[in-house]
Image 1: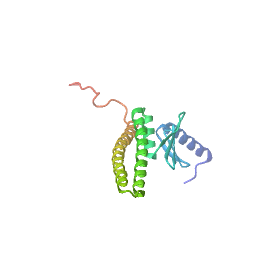
Image 2: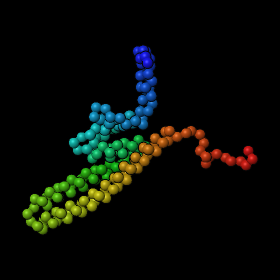
Image 3: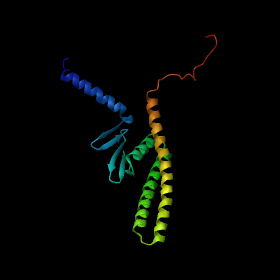
Image 4: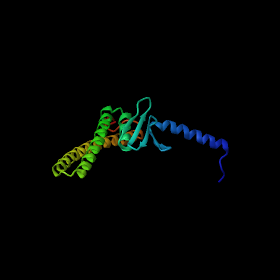
Amino acid sequence: MTQPNAETQQRILRLAQEGMELMRDNLIWQQNGRYHVFGHYELTATARGCRVQPQHQDARQFGTVKTGLAWCIAHKYQRHDVAMAIATLDQQQQIAAADVQVRTQQARRTKDAQRRETSLLKADCRQQQLSQIQHQLDKCVNLAKYWQIRGFNNETARTGRSPSQRTSRPGL
């Protein structure tokens, strides 16, 4: 098999680039350690979690890339209520996790048994709150995943009338 000439290679490359531009609003790709999401968001992993930079907006900080990506999906589909819930729950989760860690360390360092017990009780209570927050955040993330999958399915759905829209006339 012969190699295509330079002109043919250039045409193929141009077609591929045009196709990528058309699909850009539905793509997530990684380049130079950053995630480019839907052509409108850039996610960067940081020591504290994930930094999301939407185009023409201020950057946002999330605890994980997963929650940052879920926020991008909710924002893309203009589900601002869920995007706000993801951001709020993620922040609450980070605060609760830090509180549990501090109270547990405090209990280990304390010599007084009563103070140790109080710190452990507070840490346990905060751990239960953290579990509830995590459960709510997981629901929001799963909802964003559902929208993304549904979006892909809608992109490839056949055009035309669905069976419920067709009219049926006896005898015709």
